[in-house]
Amino acid sequence: MSAILRPWKSGDAEALAGVYERADDALLSNIPDDRTIVGAQTWITSITDAEAAGDLCARAIVHDGDRSEQRILGKVMASGIERRHSSAWISYWAVAEARGHGLVSAALRSFVDFLHDELGIYRLELGYRVNNPASAAVARNAGFIIEGREREKLLYDGVRYDTEVCARLSGDPRHPGLRMPIAAPH
Image (tube, rainbow, N blue to C red; front, side, top):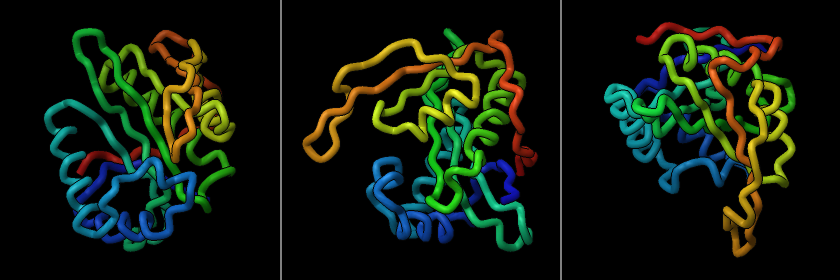
């Protein structure tokens, strides 16, 4: 499956709402509550506005087929960009059919390189539930190092989950894996 990373654009709202409509349990906890086209447009607008303000950086993972199609396969995002300490919080998700192919790992490796090299962010952090080996593999395959465990941090459907917190510093060795092409901003 061939894919690229590119900025979100307002024309993605309908496709993003379609992703929301087909979301499985693994994706439901990572998407907004308003899963309509209007909700998707609101999310995209908030993301692009925050990116313009320098508060975050988000990229869509899209199928690199016919340019008129460009199906949304997932997203990578750096939020809470903190300039004083040069840090950001990383998140990612993928639709079910895009999982298990190394796609998100390749996207995250490219995104991490971009954040370190182009945006000058020194420390990138992320966390995942310890019962989510796929998310752990993505983090590990992008060069993130586990720094600790947060006990019972998350609550889903009345059940508490531990999380592992990881970080990647700009001076850490680059993961040798494949990178995903990044499209220029529009």
